[in-house]
Length: 228
Image (cartoon, rainbow, N blue to C red):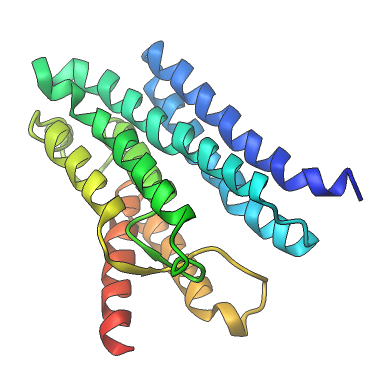
């Protein structure tokens, strides 16, 4: 039993390790790898809470570890990735607007940990979803087949996108939670349906599908709020 209670924390720490690997890759200008490790970090971030609930071993330590890991993997790592990316396409102060991402990410995580409303819903875009969206940027530049590369490397984007991402994380917008308390279809119809939609977007639009997923998530949440 003592070993079992540490399993969720070990999963959380693998999230942190992947975030550190992303930072290392970004400092070496290996931006596709940096983005890949950010995206991979979302997997243990999704699993740790689910495993903790299934094993009945949730704890305050695990909650704090989760926030610390998220700040590194989904706050600091995306910021460094974007700063290194902007060195090629922008100059001066523009490069450092991305520092807002971990700053507002930390604020979002602190609010989440102390907001009793955020049990089965979220207020503001999660750091995980934000980072997953941002991690698609280098892949869009390198591989997108729908829009030319110049669309994704305009200097203004290195200002606008970090600001939008930061504002969305702390916005008082109620969003449905993507975390599963269990694997029941009945209790998670909307989550399963959204995941199926995500697969469709990625299959049809490739890396551009990530941006479409975030946009759809926001729109579905707003529609759900009005319908409730």
